[in-house]
Length: 405
Length: 112
Image 1 (cartoon, rainbow over the protein chains, first blue to last red):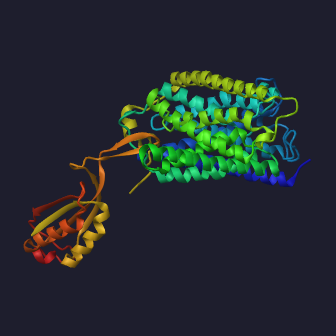
Image 2: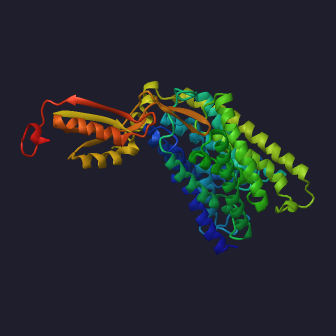
Image 3: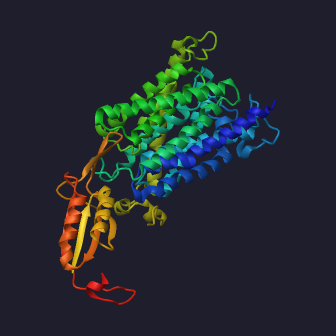
């Protein structure tokens, strides 16, 4: 039966999650690039938002959430077929249109996260083609496996708001795109610094607030589950922010704003899969571990492996998401203040399922993204010319300037 | 007449302007510029990666004065812009051939 309170909260949460991408993530990323590329990054996020929305209506929602096989959903809800004002989303107290919209905002932010891997050098048509294909080939099946009644869902995987579906899938795919696309000219030693760290802070703050919709909204009800999810989300974000800035302060003698707000996002990504299952004390631990793990992987990816995952999508989202998934199996324990595992399920079984989920999503994201990038490269190419890259994408691709002063 | 160009630390601009006003300078032009001298640039660290900032933000002052006033102006800028640290800037003095006030058409020192 429809519940007005739940519906009102989910309508609100949906709004918050869209706000995470537009303009939150766009500004978070936009501030980190060179000034002559700022518009291109905002454009990527915005265009992905529009493109994914259309695909979501046409078939992506149905393939993710309509009844189907363990591997992929069915086609019964293409174009929201059969879904009207009175239709409730299965097993919920909210209209299916609201659930459709809520899930759409997740589908929007996930490919938008990958933008961070390819900023400042990828052709716009390649961005659109890659992201459209990626939604259908990576996001949709993974969402079905984990949330839509697919095989991982049947095994009892615990991914409350998208550690696997959103963060690991985006993070792993980002690494593949970065490798195949190649680094920005000048990487690693001769790059320009972020042009507007203040913009990155504003974007991170919008992401933080929006994340309340992301995690607490994933309860799908306006009750205690949402309240606890919001609480642990906030605590993890605050903890990881302090962890990141403390490491930098000790290492470089300067506590940096960019470092602090990057820690925020690491803490948010790490708590995401756990947010519906754990208590506030665990949130401190998750923020601590998530912040530290993501920090160290940034330099491993960039300096050890010399992969130009430009805005650290894998290190922050991939590592955060996977870490959170694994910690969920432990922190869910009622003795640790968590919601407790279902009866007759052991922690070791749950940990094995979580680990299997991490491996499966990692492998599928890498393999499928690799194939998509190769396909896009053959069809329209990947990179802009070197001269265009130097001049910046704002003028050469979009014919605009971020700052006309 | 002399044309004095000074490149100074941005945070010393207000002190220099006040000192020049006190000395009797009636007008000057300021621009935000970037450059480097012996100080070279500096390094900034974002997410653990070091960036060489080759060009440091500076402020460039331009002021035209009668020749007999130039030394006083140079000393004023020198003293008020100085912190003692590397990167305090430079002052250049050029001979100024002519000056014209746009509104009245006056020329020479009376146009300054």
